[in-house]
Image (cartoon, rainbow, N blue to C red; front, top):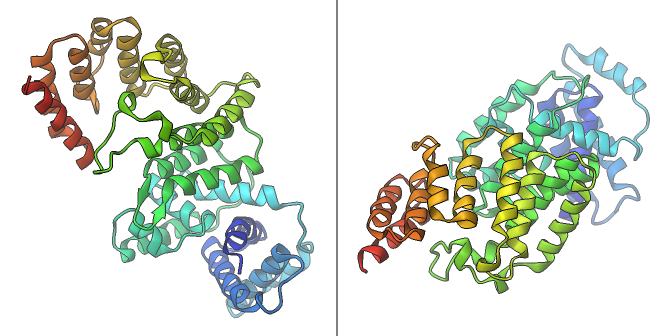
Length: 378
């Protein structure tokens, strides 16, 4: 049984049922029942048209489940209105499912969970393990999300930007539990790129590939974090870098710059440098200027200040940092790094220790603590 095939077909089949008028939760139940039947039947009798088989089976199961309810007549009338299954609506139905799972009425965490469940085909248990919450809690979250979007009709275009933010949230979770969420986010973004021709979708896919390419170099054998400047670049995935750059160049050529394209351009410049010393920081600052014009995210300005410190010297970076709110996440860590670059090791050590106390993750805290200890030992 080709599990990858079933997972790739699921979003389109689910989208078709919802477009035909099925309630989202009922449609998902019907699709899951059809998948179970496919696992049972296909090994002995593989269909010529797997997608058509799933659509027919899922629609039949949906009708069976709703026939006894008050909506029976309306649901049965839909059978006569719906054309026979065919390949034409595949991309549109998949795309609409992305929009539905990223509906603005959903919280970010609910949108992520519903996307992984309905579009990604992950089980509730897998999603719960990935986000380190009890399975019952995740099941309730997904059920609430389904109820929220039930009855939503595909009568207007969805918001691509919201879908991309949801996918980026998934990507940034990295690897947790038994699910590689970064790889899953890349797969889902590839699927989205096949369904819609949009430069920011390409920009996000390029950004994910370029970041994911450095994954093997980010941690030492003992699990500790390795800063970008100290990473062994021979461990980077050159194939993913080449693909990411190619996708980015095609997106930029369309002259419709967006936030994810600008971020990908910065990642590409880091990936292009043979060594940390050869990084083109001047271009990186220019791209941060572009990015700052596209988003009011203060973290962009924080990263820009660090880039200025690399391009124009640490004092210039500290001056740029001084214009920002010092309560920003990682502001103290950035200040520590720039003070270290400026030769003020006492201040840098103090700030590293302070930043360690604010670190959001244990590996980051340990990394900052080691930096402080190293400077204090001098």
